[in-house]
Image (cartoon, rainbow, N blue to C red; front, top):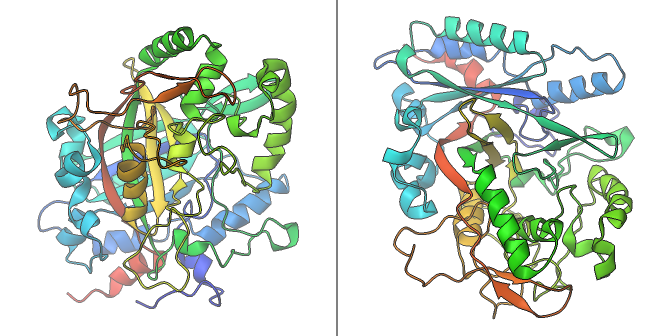
Length: 459
C-alpha cells in the first residue's frame, strides 16, 4: 500500500477517514462492536463497507455545505476500525505496535491501573474484531443505518457478541447560549488540536507541522476506546466536603479539580483573586469563547510553577502540561516529532438508563504511546509534576487511577489544594475514584483504500 504524503498528495484527504482530523459535531453517536465468526472471510463485505465510510475530504465538504445553510439534518458520518484480533483473524498485515498487539484487556490492569477484567462490563471481555462508529443528529437514520450494517454482515459475525454503546450530547443554556457539557457539569470539547488552516480562504488546507501527531505513514491512526462511568453523586459530595475543608466556594473548589470553571474559563487566566467572582466570569468567558474558537489555545503555566493559581494536580494541567521540557519519544523515524503527547479527543457522554452515566472516551493518535503517556505517566502518577519538580502534586483527581498495591498503604502523594489565590497555603485532600473504567479496546483506523483493496485479496 502506498504511503500518503499529506504535503503533496491532493488525494490524501479523500483516503483518510473522517473524525480523525476534525470532530464530527453530531449529537448522537453509536459504536457497534462486532466479532467475526471463525473461518469467515468478510473481505467482500468490508470492501463494500468502504463505499459507506466518510472521508476527511467529504467531511470538509459537508461542513462547508452546513455553513452555507444547505445542510442535510440527516447527514451521517461513518468510521470503521479494526482491532488486533480483527487483523489476526483476517490474516492481514498488522500495524507495528506492541501495545496494539497486547490488546487493552491483556495488559491494561498492570500498565494503566485499570480494574481487573472480572469487573469490566461483560461485553468488553469478548474478542472484539471491529468497531463501527456512526455519528448523526437523526435517531431514525441512526437506527436505519445500524440495521443495514448488521444486514451486511449478518452471516459473518457472532450475533450473540455484537453489541452497541450509544452516546448523546448534553446541553444546557449558559447566559442564553447553548453549551455542551459532560456529566459532572463541565463545559465539554474544549482545547482540541487543530489540523487545518483557520483562514477562511484556506479552511481545508492541512497544517503541515501538526498532522504527524495523529496520522501515520499508512494514512491511518490508532483509536483508543474506553467506557468511563462517572459517579456524579459521589463527585458532588466530595466537592462540598473539599470546599468546606478549604473554606472556599463550591465553584472555586470545582475549578481546582478540573483546572477551569464549569463554564470553561481557565483558572490560570485570572489576574487577581477578585476576578474569580461569578459576575466577572461571564465577561472573561465571552473572551475565551473566541479564544477557543479561533484556535489560539495558548494557555501557559510557566508563570505558575508552584500551582498557586491552577493546582499542579488539576485535570487539564495533568493531561496537557504545556511544559517545553515534556517531549514524548517515538520509535518511528520522524523529521519533526510532536512536542508533546497530544491526542485528538472524540468523546461523547452516555446515559446507561440504569442510573449510570459517563463518557465514551475516544481518542485518535499516531502512536498508542501518546495515550499511554497521558494516562499512565501523567494522570496516574502521583509524583509527576507539570510544574516545579520538587512538588509531588498527587494524581489527576478526575481520571487518575490508583495502583491496587498502593491503595490504602498511605504511600500515595495526596493532592495539594489552594486555600487562597496565589498564596502558599495548601491543604491535603484525596479526591479520587469518581470515575470508573468499565472496559474498552485499542483499534486502528486504516485509510479507506485499505478496505477497497480487500477486493483484490488472493483467494
